[in-house]
Amino acid sequence: MRVLTGSDVLKKNFDSSVVTIGNFDGVHRGHAELFRQVKAACVQRGLPSVVVTFEPHPLAVLAPKNAPPLITTFAQKKALIAETGVDCLAAIDFTPEFSRMPAEAFVRDILMGCLGMRHIIIGHDYAFGKDRQGNQKTLERLGKEYGFTLEDISPVGEGRTIFSSSLARRLISRGDMPAATGILGRYHVISGTVVHGREIGQTLGFPTANISTCNELLPPDGVYAVMVAVDGRILQGACNIGNNPTFEGGARTIEAFLLDFSGQLYGHEIAICFVQRLREVMKFPDVAALITAIQQDVATTKSILAAADQSLIKPLFSPERIGE
Image 1 (cartoon, rainbow, N blue to C red):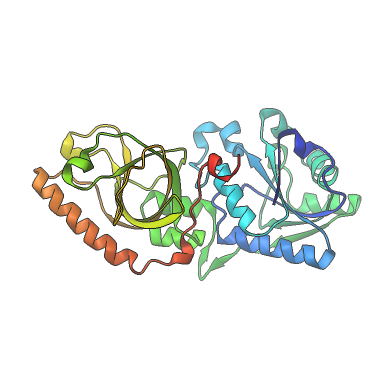
Image 2: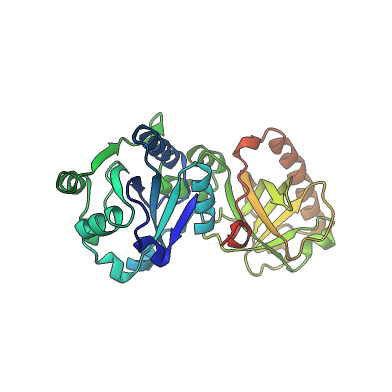
């Protein structure tokens, strides 16, 4: 997949193409269906496919207090979009200046002038341009004027559930990992570098990998059954998110105990795929009670992960691991 960023987006990149546009945070099952339809249109027309997105998220620039915690980093989003088989990802720098560009100028100068748009497929109710003035009707009018065609696809879902990034965020934020998996089409994943922590797990006989991550959206504090990608291997594990209240708390940490693993991981990057939440973080009366609880967590984790769907494991790493 060709990736255009920065000033490269503003060059003449394609003479003709099929385009779709959106934020695509999480690259969930609805996005996957949109990309499938884009590729089908490309085959029918004999044209390349271009996915247009924005970096950073527009709300991070226009209303930072209202900006959602993102499901994926840009690097992770890029990797997921590449997996769909589209030809090009054009990531437009979203700046205050760009936000003031009228919808018509955006369509004429960038989508058509730089990316060669001849056909565009958008999700239902998508809006764009200055003050979100661009919409389906805008595109229909401009299409007649400039000679491109438009396809507006219906919402994608299952039963009464419509797949959306906002729904996935809500589910992850309340720790409902199986439901979030149903929206994303994969286990929610965060990645990060293993750093030194308080080494409490080591003293308890359950050494953990303490993770520093750039991912914004973390599940709530608790203990989770997880699949962990490290050094080309997929391992089972239990992950604790919280502040270790039994040991008088402290900073919030993400610690993964890898089952059937021994070795030193400091400085390594790992990806943690959240399968299911086991319980809340608890303050135990003593260390013995904590060790008993951890032993039970490990047993429950093994039972849950024995039935984990391997096809839902997407080990998405940070920029250094995928070429940025």
